[in-house]
Length: 325
Image (cartoon, rainbow, N blue to C red):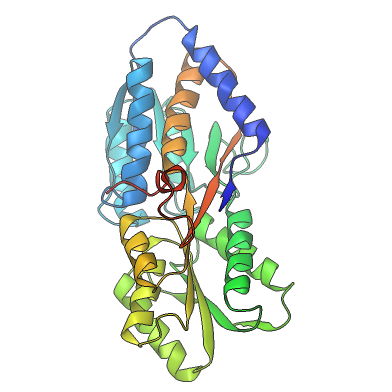
C-alpha cells in the first residue's frame, strides 16, 4: 500500500479555513460548481464533497455542467451561471487558454472565480502578472507529481525495461498536459524504457482501445501504457483485453472509477492512481465561503493521491477513495 496525502501545509491551510468559516456570521450565499462534465464519476464525487461542505455551512450549491468535456459546450453553461449571479463560481476549466476570457467576464460581473482540478493559464494565481492570474485559488492534485508517480509505478511493473506510451485526451488541458509532463520527466531516469509517441483519444475510450491495438501492431514488444484520465485508461484496458494481452501489457490508470477497479480485478489494468475529488469539491466550497466572509484564502490548495493495486484494492481504508458512480 502506498498512500500519498496532501502536504502538511495544505492540511494546515484547510484547517485554518474550516476554523475561520465556523466563526463567521451566518448569511445565505449561493455558490456555483461547473464541472468538466456532469456524468463522469470523478465529477460526481467532487459534487458530493461540495454538497457536504455546502450543507455544513448552510449555503446553496448550484451544480451545472456540459454533457462532454468540451470548452465549446462549457462556455454556454458558464454564461448561464453568470446570468444567475451566484456569489462565487467554482469551475473545472476544460481548456487552460480558451476559458480565460469567458471566466474574466464572471470576474468583471463581480463574481469571484475558483478553479478546481483543471486550471487556466499555468495555475499560478494572484501574482499580479499575466492574463490568467485573476482566480482566487486553484484546488487540485499536483499533476506533474502524479505523472511521476505513474511513471515509477509503470517502470516497476514492466521490470524497468521495454516500450511504453501515453494515452492522453488532447493538448491544452492543464491536468493531463502536466501528467504527461511528469511521466516523461520521470521516465528520463529509466534509460531502458522507450516512451513512444503520445496517442490523443479525444476522451473516447473506444478510440483509445483502437489506438492500443494499432500501437501493438507496430510494436509487438509493447510493455505498458499510461492512461492520463478515466477514458484513456478504460480504453487502454479494453484494448489490452481485445488484443489478448491481459497480464502482458501493463496499464497504469490515472483516476479510480468502479469500472477501472473492475478492470483491475480482471487483470487488464494493473494500477490506479486515485485523486481525491471529494476533497477538491469540499475545499472549494469552504474556500469560497471563507472569501465571502472576509477571510484570506491561499492561491493554491493541493490535494492528495492514493495508489491502488491488487494488493490493497479490498482494504476499506483504500477502497473509500474509489469514485462514486
